Image 1: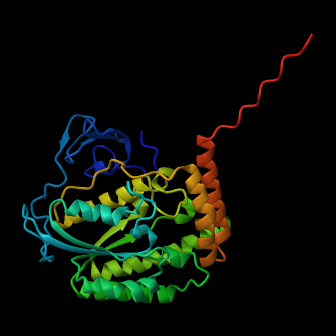
Image 2 (image 1 turned 135 degrees about the vertical axis):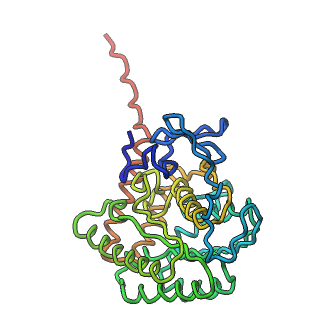
Length: 345
């Protein structure tokens, strides 16, 4: 029985393959989901009752979006320009590849598309960016790239700053969305989850952050109503509140979280008619380890959020320390006391 909140899709539902992975068998080429579905490398699956699901990269008849003239015909290799705008989550923090470089969901998605199409990918995201930073420092370069796909995911940094200005946030995001859409880009946007729950913020601080994220989500709702595009509702993703979904700072997705985001946007792109093999679910990045993570929180994480906030910083910093203690407590054992010398008779 699935214990995730929100619960994963049951095995008899069309989106059964969105459930969380509970066991991986890379050598055999399959993985087990918490609803009992077994998924194979090609995207095919078997339900617990024995019924089969066809690979998801096979397009359903009539699924191609007629309003997207740049989409390649089914079975043909196309040319896709993809640009990513945003902050540290889109930059890739939380998902380090084998070289130790940050990778992230956008690069995972671009690499998957590149298996079946020619892709020009440009990641313009910068850690710490606000909506105003994206408008001022990233938008012009994004337009120069003339993207077919443009991810616009930013705003969490705005919600934790003492200079929070919802009207300015709305104006900046709507401007970015409008000019990208007018140039012909399909927008990839998001609805955020309850990050106060991830941070474990108490009382009034939690309510304050929720209220700001609600405002941010209303702006993204308005963007979607005006310009369409493909929108991921992260609050509905199974496992979004699991500790494994997040890196030690609880602000950035872990490798598992980044791969989940890449898969969710893959589903949306498949629904729009862009066919490609989904990115792999096997974890192949490098783990920071408990001591390195704790050093990062002390030397980089807490000072970073301290520079950017006044009202939320102390509580968020405490949540990071608590997360570090949890991870260290599970991996470190207390020293063994030396045995007492034998007593002489």
